[in-house]
Amino acid sequence: MFNLLDLLNIVKDYEGAFMTIGGAVLGWWGQIAKNRLQRQRNEIDANNLENEQLKLALERERFLTDKLNLWGASYTMLWERLYDRESVIKDYHSAALSAQRRVNELEIRLGASVTMFEELPEFPPEDPAQWAAQCPPSPQNRDDHHDNTDPHTPRTSSSPLGGRQAPSRQEDHRSAKED
Image 1: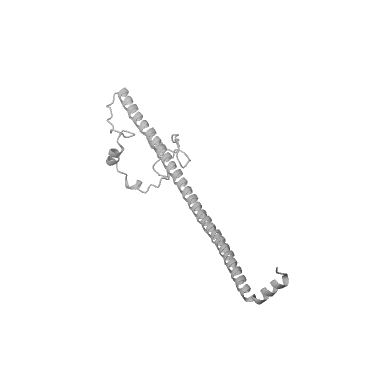
Image 2 (image 1 turned 90 degrees about the horizontal axis):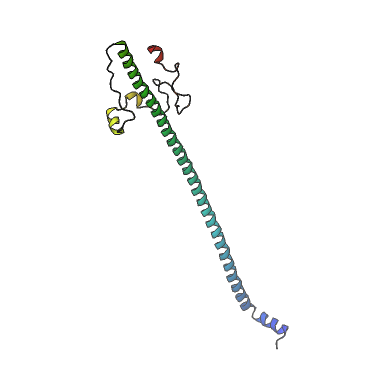
């Protein structure tokens, strides 16, 4: 049997071999530890990169969603404005037809010759494409930026979208001339 002194003598005699084997084992273990740490760093960096890419994608999505919501609201506002303008045109169209009928009634009552008014176009038109071809926009209306500030049209409301109430007598620039 070996005692401790014999074991120490063997280690002393072969200390170079033991040191080489021990250094190789520790170097191998150190390389494994280094590779494991590098892999963990790479995973952390990849996660950070993925998180950064995800963050950029989310920011881009938020930006595009905000733009889409803004354009949707603008689109809705323009349609509401169009419907408001169409409503005002319908009111004026009805008023013009009523005025023609009233003038003809008064002329018949007074025994005067009946005035033949020009035929008013049908409103709303049944075929908008045909109506647009017959009534192209005039040059002064081509720069209309949907701001409801046409100086020749009486304001129907102080609202930027217009309103459904008829213009008051002071707002109607034709009322003073026709009275």
